[in-house]
Image (cartoon, rainbow, N blue to C red; front, top):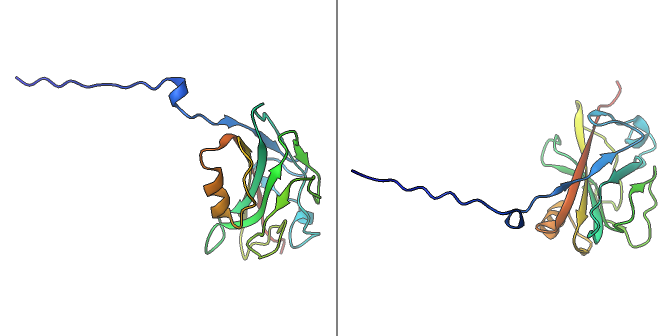
Amino acid sequence: MQFVIALVLLATPMEVSMTAKLQVTSPAFRDNEAIPTEFSCDGRNVSPPLAWSGVPAETKSIAILVEDPDAPKKVFTHWLVTGLSPTTTSLPKGAALPSGATASNNDMGKMGWAGPCPPGGRHHYHFHVYALDTQIPKPSSRAELLAAIRGHVLAEGELVGTFQHAR
C-alpha cells in the first residue's frame, strides 16, 4: 500500500506581489475605440491628452509607454516617458512634459511622441502607465524601460486605442 502525501503551500499576502490597478483614460477616445486623426501622422501628430488615477501613496515616479504590438516586424514604441512626479495625474494634448520628466527616443529614432501611422490595416495602440516605487534612469529603449521597472511596479493601467488610415 502506497501513501501519497501532498503539501499545499499557501502564500500569505506579504509573499505575493500583487500590482494595483491604475485607471487610464483620455478625453480624446475611449478604451478600444479609434484614436482621432489629429494625433496620427495623417493629422497634427501630437500626443493625445492622457489621465490616470489610483496612484498608490508610496509611488516615487510615473512612467508611460505607448506601443503598437500589431507592427509587422516587432512591437513598435511610439512614446516612452519617465520621471513623471507621482502627483502628476494627466498630460495635456501635445504634452509639454512637466519639470523632471523626460521623453526617450521612439522607434522612429526621434525623442517624444510618434503618432499612429500603420503600414496597413487597423492597429492597436497600448497606452501603459506605471506607478513605480523608485526613480529610474532615462531608458534608451522599450526593452531597457521594461528591465528597469521589473520588480518596481506598484500599480499599472492601460488604455487601448485603434487607428487605421482613412482611404
